[in-house]
Length: 270
Image (tube, rainbow, N blue to C red; front, side, top):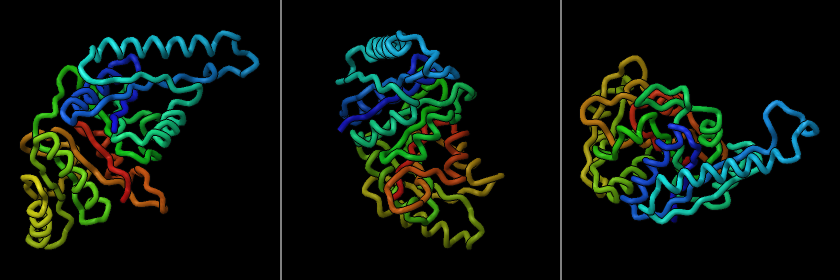
């Protein structure tokens, strides 16, 4: 199985590629780098398109793939693919549906602040429709990020968070990391909530800790900026909706992805 990286010749695209290569190396996986190219110049009617415009768009995609190839520099087995013509989110989702990679790694929005994740329209659409896990990379990761630290996972007792915990445990085992099961105080009896989280951590097949953190502002704010040792990434479950296995962001996970200071991996609903 392979990892797919959505690449663009931007800082955010390079961040995603850096994280994808680091994950692939640690997990002994190959990487597929994909670049999407449009089918029409934005804002122009089809009749107004220059006959060579589509060829130029494809050539630009191929140029970006060459940049990615130079950045990879033979570190892992890699394939390159131009996707299009069409809207980036649509052609990427169609590709993920057909290929079912282990995970797709995407960069943050250009508007993100350094060290933070922010969503652009393409990332949001992929997060709301992918059938595979999606990782969103914080801005500046290529220069300052690493997968050091435990794999944190958000837990609230739901079936979605149970799936996220199991995914985090498998990932941590392969990365040689511990798991940090994190719950945010929800108003229930503190000892009962702590016991439940501790029980989840104790039954994982990898070294794990469980903790209940006090509510500060919002659940999303706590998860996006965890105290103590910085996690290598945060794993979140997605909202259950319909009968199809997809990544659907709930209100908490959406806010976490937009503001987290580390990579966030969102797991499809069980």
